Every structure is written in structure tokens, then in C-alpha cells.
Image 1 (cartoon, rainbow, N blue to C red):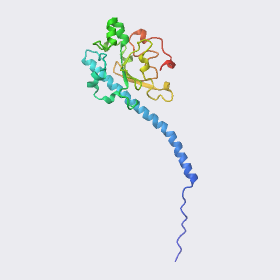
Image 2 (cartoon, rainbow, N blue to C red; image 1 turned 135 degrees about the vertical axis):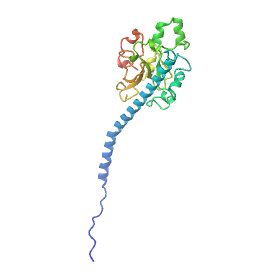
Image 3 (spheres, rainbow, N blue to C red; image 1 turned 90 degrees about the horizontal axis):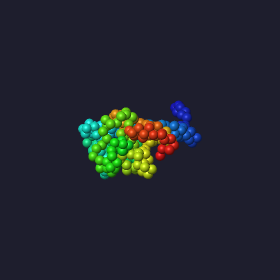
Image 4 (tube, helix red, strand yellow; image 1 turned 30 degrees about the horizontal axis):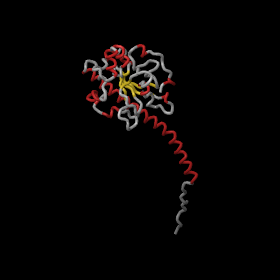
Length: 234
């Protein structure tokens, strides 16, 4: 009877080999995770831009049904209420990149520079006190492709309207979020999303909604005011 053929003993991984494999996996993960994180952030930014575009279309449809006027300033009910039949889903009010507890991520243009110019002082006070019955007429906007309707606000801000002439205190420039997307670790490398009067929506780099041209403004002295340095933007 022949003896069984020799079979070498099975050799397992040594501790050193296992550590090397784990180290390689760790290195690969460290390389891939930032890339995956940036891809996820970009996807959220794209979804947010879609929200802005849909809100913007709701605004234009409302204006089409109301003699080209957008909703007037109201309080405590603001623009989200009269536009709701046109956008139809409260989920559109929150940017996916915003905090999950945030109920609304966007400001609408308050147009206060225009109304201060065309109204009497008494009527402008009514306008700012949410008592003026008319909203902005979009046909009065001279540069619709470069005038903002919607922008992103800072998380937790209760403001609904973007006003930029309220004196030294309470200026709503401080309410704008300029770098919600891809703004870490350097905010000035980030961007935010905006809607425009012509119906378009696009992303603007940090601070570019207000400098060198204030795209929220209509009145030339405000639209083309001396540009803010990016370092001065909150």
C-alpha cells in the first residue's frame, strides 16, 4: 500500500501581512472618502439648484396670473403661502445641504430699493410694514437675466425677504448664505444657488451675488455701489 502523497500544511496570513493589508485598505479609504464626500456635496448642490429653479418657475407662474406682479410683502404669511399652489411641495423650501431641521432655506428679493425710489415716504413706510397691497412687477426689472429673485439664507435665519437698505443695524446682507456648497474648509471657495427674473437659476461663487455688482438691486446707485471686498462679507 502506497503512502499518501505529501501535502504541505496550509499557511495562514502572518500578523505582519494582515497589518500591511489593513494599512493599504486604510490608505485607499482615505483617498476615496474625500472624493465621495465631494461627490455627495455636489449632488446636494445640484438638487438645491433644482429646488430654486422650481420655486422660480412658481413665482413666474404666479406673476403670469397676477398682471406680472409677484406676491406683495406680507407678515406673518409671506411668499411661501401664495406661491404654494404653484410649487406644491413644502420639501422644495429646504435645500438638501441645509440643516435637516431647517424649514426654509431661501430668501426672496424684497425689492426695497425700487419701492423706496418710486413710492412716497408714507407709502414706503407702509411697504416696509407689510401693508402695501402690490408686489414687484417683473416687467419693471431692467436686467432680468442678472437680477436675483431667490437666494439662500443662513441656517436658522427667520428672514423671508432680502432687504439691503435698513440702516447700519439689521441689514439683511448678513442673512445671506454665500457658501452653502463646497465651502469647507475655505468659505471663499464655496458657492450658493440663486434664481433670476428671467426664469433661470444658477450657482454663484462666494460673494458674487452682491459684488462687484449687487444683483439683488434695481436702482443704479445701489446696484453699482462701490464693491465690497470679499473679506468684508459675513
